[in-house]
Image (cartoon, rainbow, N blue to C red; front, side):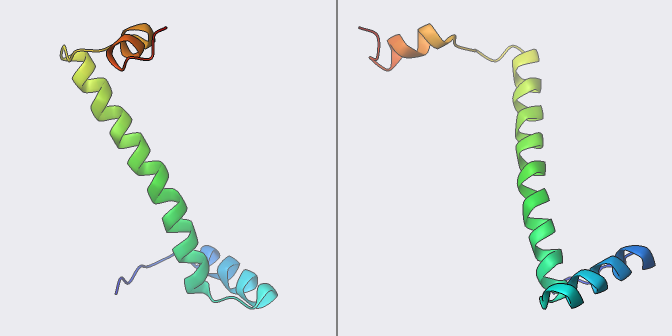
Length: 73
Protein backbone atom coordinates (compact mmCIF):
# COMPACT_ATOMS: atom_id res chain seq x y z
CA UNK A 1 0.00 0.00 0.00
CA UNK A 2 1.34 3.40 -0.97
CA UNK A 3 -0.13 6.65 0.28
CA UNK A 4 0.56 9.90 -1.54
CA UNK A 5 -0.43 13.51 -1.08
CA UNK A 6 -1.64 15.37 -4.11
CA UNK A 7 -2.40 19.01 -4.69
CA UNK A 8 -6.10 19.75 -4.30
CA UNK A 9 -6.35 20.70 -7.98
CA UNK A 10 -5.03 17.29 -9.09
CA UNK A 11 -7.37 15.47 -6.75
CA UNK A 12 -10.31 17.52 -8.04
CA UNK A 13 -9.40 16.60 -11.61
CA UNK A 14 -9.23 12.94 -10.62
CA UNK A 15 -12.62 13.23 -8.92
CA UNK A 16 -14.20 14.74 -12.04
CA UNK A 17 -12.65 12.13 -14.32
CA UNK A 18 -13.69 9.32 -12.02
CA UNK A 19 -17.28 10.53 -11.85
CA UNK A 20 -17.54 11.01 -15.62
CA UNK A 21 -16.16 7.59 -16.47
CA UNK A 22 -17.29 5.41 -13.58
CA UNK A 23 -13.73 4.29 -12.90
CA UNK A 24 -11.98 4.80 -9.59
CA UNK A 25 -9.33 7.40 -8.86
CA UNK A 26 -7.07 4.48 -7.95
CA UNK A 27 -7.46 3.11 -11.47
CA UNK A 28 -6.29 6.36 -13.06
CA UNK A 29 -3.43 6.83 -10.61
CA UNK A 30 -2.25 3.27 -11.27
CA UNK A 31 -2.45 3.79 -15.04
CA UNK A 32 -0.50 7.05 -14.84
CA UNK A 33 2.20 5.54 -12.64
CA UNK A 34 2.63 2.48 -14.86
CA UNK A 35 2.86 4.60 -18.00
CA UNK A 36 5.35 7.02 -16.49
CA UNK A 37 7.35 4.29 -14.77
CA UNK A 38 8.15 2.67 -18.12
CA UNK A 39 9.33 6.02 -19.46
CA UNK A 40 11.52 6.60 -16.39
CA UNK A 41 13.04 3.13 -16.62
CA UNK A 42 13.91 3.74 -20.28
CA UNK A 43 15.41 7.12 -19.46
CA UNK A 44 17.63 5.80 -16.67
CA UNK A 45 18.75 2.82 -18.74
CA UNK A 46 19.72 5.17 -21.58
CA UNK A 47 21.60 7.44 -19.16
CA UNK A 48 23.51 4.44 -17.73
CA UNK A 49 24.49 3.32 -21.22
CA UNK A 50 25.62 6.84 -22.13
CA UNK A 51 27.81 6.99 -19.02
CA UNK A 52 29.32 3.60 -19.90
CA UNK A 53 30.07 4.70 -23.46
CA UNK A 54 31.65 7.94 -22.25
CA UNK A 55 33.75 5.88 -19.82
CA UNK A 56 35.10 3.85 -22.73
CA UNK A 57 32.76 0.86 -22.99
CA UNK A 58 33.07 -1.04 -26.26
CA UNK A 59 30.46 -0.14 -28.85
CA UNK A 60 29.58 -1.85 -32.11
CA UNK A 61 28.37 -0.49 -35.42
CA UNK A 62 25.40 -2.07 -37.15
CA UNK A 63 27.74 -3.66 -39.68
CA UNK A 64 29.91 -5.14 -36.91
CA UNK A 65 26.82 -6.61 -35.23
CA UNK A 66 25.62 -8.17 -38.48
CA UNK A 67 28.98 -9.89 -38.90
CA UNK A 68 29.10 -10.93 -35.22
CA UNK A 69 25.62 -12.47 -35.45
CA UNK A 70 26.23 -14.11 -38.82
CA UNK A 71 23.65 -11.96 -40.58
CA UNK A 72 26.04 -10.64 -43.20
CA UNK A 73 25.55 -12.25 -46.64
